Image (cartoon, rainbow, N blue to C red; front, side):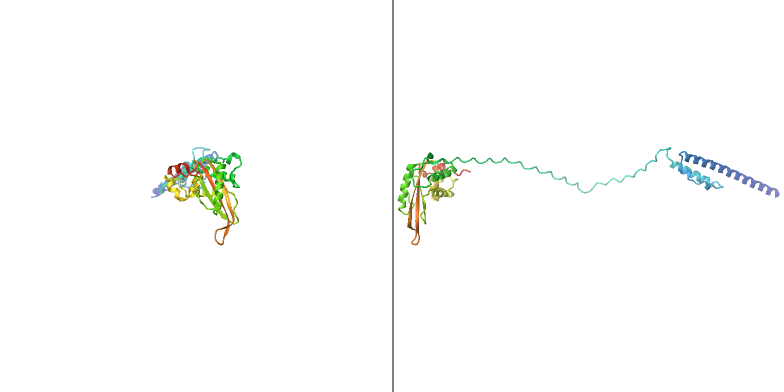
Length: 306
């Protein structure tokens, strides 16, 4: 029994000695390892390993295993070499957007080109000048105080309807003057003598009218509103519409004119209570117009020039 007790004590002593020696060896290795890591830190080594505290080492060796494991983990995180930059963190890709269910926006409308510019209409050609009646000589055979203006106005209207200008005829004017004096004795009555190309105009008032004749030309042209230039039966359609003075004034076949005037001073009685004066104007043209045929009216009474 005493031998067995001694043997157990010896074995326990040996085991304790072995454990002390093993613990010393482990401690020495750990110290060497820590010094090596300290050198790496000063020379650019792994900084994470140096952060491990040295007092974690236990006598049972557990601390050394923990230090070794953490050291290996730190080495895995260590960069490839001194001075190299750590690998940048890769940003995660955003998910690809799903196609939109809305229709694409309509393109803006194209600008409308401006309309083409139409050429400007050419100005109307000027009307030919009105020739001076009588070739510039004084107009004879008449009592008209404005014989020249009367002649010029007649030619203005003829030009409008594509008819040539007429000249003043002293013989026609003398005949017209004589007949005007006859009608004055009849209270300026409108009575045609039955001579071709004759036009009559009467006016009354108080006091007695003057001896001007141009107003008669304007009055005769006023019948133009009753004339229809589009019908084929120009005479049959228009003659009943009181257009005879107008048609004679612009008749293309006429080439000469002469006018006369006579007046009656008051008292010319219009009613038992009213009285005044009057005048009668007679103009005659040659060659006479108003030939009673549709064909003559179509070729001698032409529409207004635009």
